[in-house]
Length: 338
Image 1 (cartoon, rainbow, N blue to C red):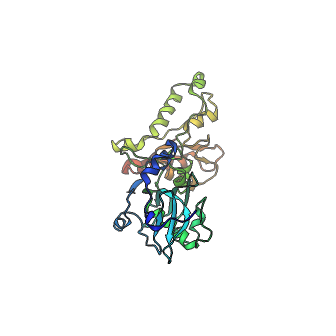
Image 2 (image 1 turned 60 degrees about the horizontal axis):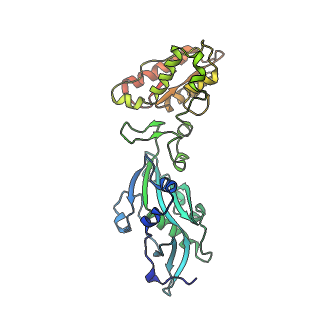
Image 3 (image 1 turned 180 degrees about the vertical axis):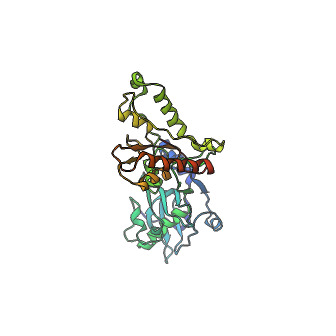
C-alpha cells in the first residue's frame, strides 16, 4: 500500500472518535482512576503545554503525523511520508513520590493491533534509547531508525488523551477525608500504580471474612460482636479524626469463646490472609514500631507469644507511647492497637 501524501495527514489523532468506538469495559480502564489528578485532557496543541503542570515539555527532532487510523509517519528529506508504527496513547499517569520534583515512573495505556495494553516504567527510561522495548507494538517499520521510533513514543505520551498525576500515598488507608478520596489499598489502586506503592499498601485489602458470620453464630457473643465494630470503625479513623475523635484505648484480646484462630484473625486482619501484622517472638522493638508506623485506618494487631522474650509490659509501654502520639497530635498513622 502506497504511503499517504503529507496533505492527508494530521499531527494529532481524533481521540474522541476513537474513544467512542471502544467497548465500555475498555473505556472504563482508560478513564483516569480515582486518586489521580488530570493535568491535560484532549489538548491538541502541544505549544499550550509549555506552561502546563505536566512534568515536561518535549521537543522533537522530527515532526510526526497520523492518518487517524493509528498509523504514524514522518516526512523525509524528499517530502515523502515514511511509516513508523501503529499506536495511539490514551492515558499517561506520572507517578510521583511526595518529596520529589521529577516523576518516579510512568503508567501508559495505549492501543496497538486492536488491543488495549498497558505498561509502566521508571522515568529514567523515558529518555533512554530502549524506551520502545517497554511497548508491544503490533505493526512498525523495521527500517525506521530506533531514535525516530523512540521520539514518536515520547510524542504520543506527551500528547495523550489524558495526562494525569498520581502522588504515591505515604500510608495505607484514606488519602484524605474529602469526598471522592482514594482508599490506599490493593483493592482500589490501579495495578500499574500499585506496583510502586509501599509493601504495606500492596498488602492492604478491605478483606472479607473467610467465614460467613452466620456460620459463627453459635460462638458469637458480645465480645466478638464488639471486635466486628472495631474492625469497621478502624477503616474510618481518618473521618473520625476530622471530627476530633482519636483512638484512646488499647484492647487486649484473649480467646476464651472457642472461636477458631483463622476465623478470629480474618476478623482482625487488614490483609487477605489470616496473619497478624506483627508477631512478637523475640525482643524486636523495631518490628513492633514498624507495624505501628505503617498501619493507618486499620487495626494494628500485635500477636503476643507467651514464650517471647519481649514481655507484655514492654509491648504495653510501646503501645502507650504510640497512643499518646495519636492523642496529642491527631496525625497519621491512625490505628486501633490490639
